[in-house]
Image 1 (cartoon, rainbow, N blue to C red):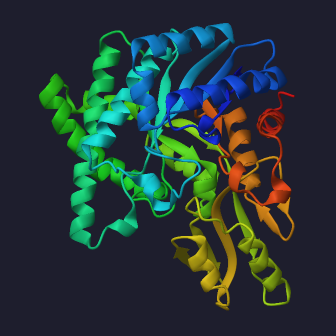
Image 2 (image 1 turned 90 degrees about the vertical axis):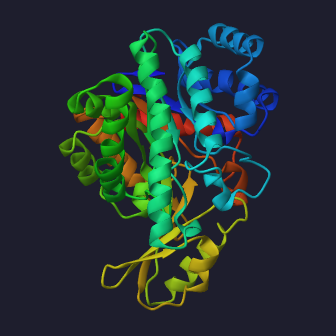
Length: 403
């Protein structure tokens, strides 16, 4: 739905269905009900997530035409897509395989280009579109600095192949579309420093050479094209887990002239591990969220303000007695309309600060609620899907002072 502060939606990765038929069935069940609650009299935007299999199926002209007709009939439109998870995302163990295949592979390139072709066919006339994607690769797969450098170079060059297609599409009269890179803990790009360093040390130098050769661009023209077509996906949960102040990050991006293609509105789980009896209660509460499907990276803050990274919740729980640790933040997308989870809380305040900045100094056209963990939440937090989605979107509208 269009607001004065950008298009607002939720990501359909919340809905199961790895093939198109199953996912479309979920959309037909939930989208009209959510629209009726939050946007009954205006078009409703969709943040579409397609697996590789679903993208292959939706690429077929009759299937795509059927979806376009359904969107028109339901007064809906697609303006952003989630191209991070390539394969299965429900009813199976995902964990670090969410990064598979990474950006060193031809499969990731082909999948992403296919998603952009679908998005170009679905975008309303005159509207820009974006697709969020993985942060190149996963750090724990890399065994040494030489391997890290090799992966960085090959992943960057592969991403530029996608950018080449986006430039051709836009220059040919097609829509402006951008690839929105999504840092997350333990990704090859996991925070604002790593994203900016990569952008200026790898992406721009390689892109200037490539696009000078392919398009005859000057250095300034190539840099402008890259900044237009490669933007940041600011997942509020991810940056909060890394203890990054959102306003500092946004000012840093502005200083370097880097754009934010999409804000994923999400909250992380956090808790204080004091030295009294409350520590055990906090550890026990985190244990309730230790589930086997998704990767729940934890970053601890110590008494001297250092950070300890745990690849997943079990490793954090194994170190729970560490007396130096004062706080845990976990990559667990909890409902944004809830602030307290017993002795635990969330990083929802970061969302409020980001949205307040969006009101006073808009920095992105795309806002997407992304709580995908409903199926694996502790039983006491689960509610009917459509009601939960609508509650999240209404809370965001309240923050934007629109309801």
